[in-house]
Structures are given as structure tokens and as C-alpha cells.
Amino acid sequence: MNYQLIKEVIDLMEKFESTVDSKSYTKDLIGFKRWIYDGEKEVQNPGYDIGWMGKENGRSADSEINTLIVHMNRYAKTYSRSAICDSAFSTQEDFIYLINLKAFGSMTKTELIKKNLQDKPVGMQIINRLIGQGWIQQHDSSEDKRSKIISITTKGIEALEDIMEKIRQASQIVTGNLSYTEKMQLIKLLQKLDRFHQDIYDKNIAPDQLIHVAYHDFLLKSN
View 1 (cartoon, rainbow, N blue to C red):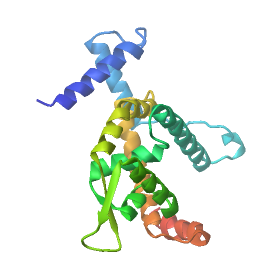
View 2: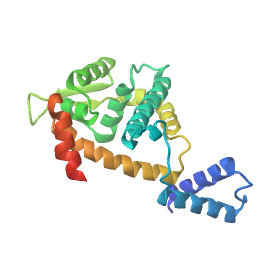
View 3: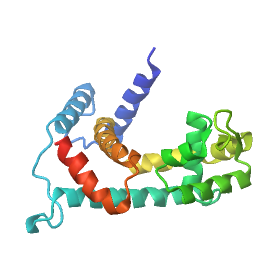
View 4: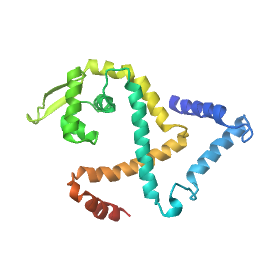
């Protein structure tokens, strides 16, 4: 039996019951099916008359998207700070590093820092802080003696489990009132953007050349 599917259907039914105006949809199977149909139709055929501040004065869609992404990042950090405010965690990055180690297993310091898209000095500070807490441990790599392999400790797993419920709640708050279908659509778009930027990031381009190379060698060639 597909329990995940059952859970998703129940979640949809709960949202339908709690948020849908009875004047728009009857609170029965017919109304529930029409609500799902209308939501799917809206995602597949979105309107293109979307407005935003400054549009009438020539402000581009690119500018609005950049602004919204910055805003979402700030909102997410605010909720993350709330989730760890009564814990031993210092920053959002602390638990993200632990989550990656728990999910993907042991890796080198460089691999972990790159997975979090951070500069090496900042990443090393976070790793050293986690080592100091006893949440991760390190040992020499059998393949490269110059590298250190790090892994999450039992103490680190316990620290993570202590705050995971709040982290999950924070994640749910960030995605807000999006429907399941909207979340899937957003994931698809963000994954496409992430793949585009990851290719550029992996090139480790010098700052004074980054805009030129990203624009001419990646953006123009992708269109």
C-alpha cells in the first residue's frame, strides 16, 4: 500500500476543509475534485499578467525575481534562528552541516564546504566549531593523507534530533500556503536554476571575471 500517497491525499483534504470557502466549492467529493482540478489548471496555465512594484517604470522580471529570492533567504534565516534560539547551535549553517553529514555520510572538509556553497575560511570555522562541540569527528583520509575525513558523531546526531522538529516546522513555514502541486512546480524551477548556477560555481571563476564569463559563456549559450 502506498502510504505516502494516502498521506498526501489526507493533507489535501485537510487543506480543502480548513481553507476553502464553501461559497466557491461544495464541501463534498464533487467540490474537492473541482478544487484539485482548478488548482492543477492554474499551475499548468498560469496567467502572464503578473504585476510587480516598478514594472510600469521598466523594472524587469529579473529584478523582481532577484528581490524575491533575497527576501525568501532572509525569511528562512529568521525562522531558522528561531528554531535554534534555545539550543546549543550557534548558526543555521551548524545544523545544515550536520544534516548533510547525516544524509550523505562521511566526506572531506572540502567536499562538505563545497556542498554548502561557502568560502573555505568560513566553512573551516563552522567545522572547527562543530568539532569543538563534539558533534563531528575527523580522521586522516586513506586515499590522500593531506585530507581529513569528517563524520557526524552520536552526540551530533542527538543534538540534531533535539531540534529537528522545530527545523521541520521552520521548513514548512517557509513554503507557506503553497499547495502540493505548487511546491512540485517550484522545486522543478529551482532545481533548473540550481543546475545552471552549480555549473558556474564549479568553475571557481575569479570575481573580476565572474559576471563576464557567466553571462557570455553560460547564460547566452543556454538560451
